[in-house]
Image (cartoon, rainbow, N blue to C red):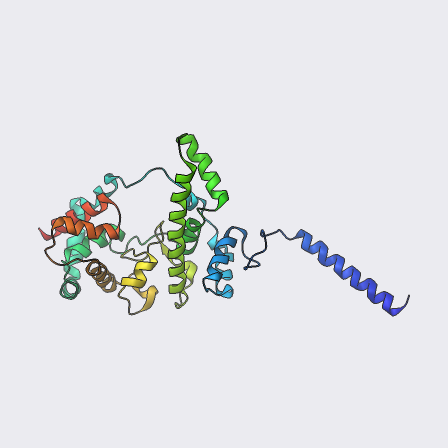
Amino acid sequence: MRRSEKKGGMRLKRLLVILILLMGIPSFGPANDSPGAPFHYQILLDRLTKDGFDKEFLLPLFLDPRAEPIPKRMTISLLTGERPEIYKKFLTLESILVAKNFLRQNLRILKEMENRFDVEKEVPVAILMVESRFGENIGKHRVIPTLGSIALMDTPENLQKNYQILRELDPALSYAWMEGLAKKRANWAYQELRCFLGIISHERIDPLDVMGSHAGALGMAQFIPSSYLAYAQSKKGLEGWLLDREEAIFSIGNYLKSHGWKKDLPVEKQGRILWYYNRSKPYVETILQIADKIKK
């Protein structure tokens, strides 16, 4: 056999081996701008890439086993609003004493916040009690898969799964209504994920080590990423801010002032401003009650 024939045979064998290997690799779905992306996150990564994020930054995060999608975060609930009962524990004598003790220990910082932002010192104390019990519970959910999973809520596959489940509970449920709700929540989560990735890209901390609430809220003050960018008083970056008492107090003061708070506002107006912090009537009422009890 001539050398050229041998070379041709070798090339053919190599091509066959490559084809066999390719046939054994699971497909990640249709062609997209993020080749090699995990199947569940393809749509999300394509969107983030188009929004200016570097694939070399994104892929290691979303391919990490810790970033696995969370099915529970993709579900839609027909229950709206929070039950007042979940806030009763913050109004016990023990909780009020803990809050008063925190105020005494941080009185200098709280007075400075009061002077700078014109916010009564008892209000940030009440917020920190309810949001994280002064840093004891800042969340146990990884922020990236939490927000990433919610952002996938409106994919056709998830919409169909949710609709089948919810129709059993409410046969009259409108698909269009459910789709509208899912799209609203998914878009909110996507925007918050964008904000978080922008924040974390400048930090030394491992992005997948950052924990938050089931909705991606961060730190003692439980700011969502967009609120962190807009209102956080942070000298040390996110990692230092997460559990820094002084920065949490000043951040809350800045948030409330930016939404129109000033001393001696009527209770009704105070409630409207607190609604921006957490859109829950029982939450707003609890914060005002705690602040009042601390003051007394």
